[in-house]
Image 1 (tube, rainbow, N blue to C red):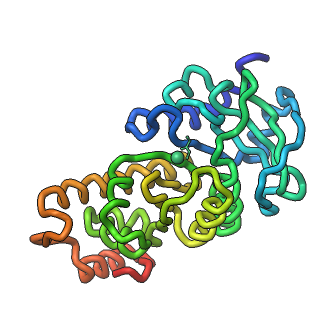
Image 2 (cartoon, rainbow, N blue to C red):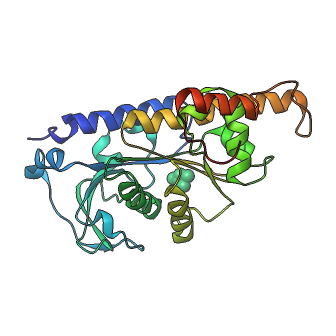
Length: 275
Ligand code: 2HA
Ligand code: ZN
């Protein structure tokens, strides 16, 4: 039945997250991409509407997600249009038994194909599935302006970004106690960026790409969206503060390392060793 796949709960949750993310201003033009590793029972509910295409090489090998199905945004699609045209702006793919190829199964209407960042999405799913015993399902890439702005003035290290973001609001150390990863500029869509991101994703849930954007991972759409939102909110506060004091300027007061340790004690957080 036409329209059935679009009405499944996971598809609606995907559309809602994409729309919320567009409304945040994180997806100019065709910027950013989103993927969801579909659980077996959700795929079973739509198997009758799947049409398998040709196998194509992924460019990377991801054996932990062999055989899995993913809902993923289409190359060149605009987040702004996802709610109105999901079968054109996204589609479902399946990974083959070796983890080296994929085939399109639904969507990508009008001759489309998955996002140019497919290798990074699949590599991130590969490591997050293993690191979370299968719980992680969502990978989101966006271009939030404030976190990108910080990549021009902070040292491009996990330590510098994590520590500064933790200092902005108490929420940060609670939402990402493991910190954030940071990568210097790389060619978008490249295997190198995919591999470097996945290496960091083994221990963090967010990776900053200098002068480009942010990748976030989550077990649910809420978690992935919430992480991006928290990081960008903290980044926006830091940008305001730096605008007031200047990049070399002193903050009059901040959340101190002692404060961070009290937070860790009170909430039983395992903070990365940056405080
Ligand atoms: O255009 O965000 O990184 C999609 C992207 C590439
Ligand atoms: Zn991008």
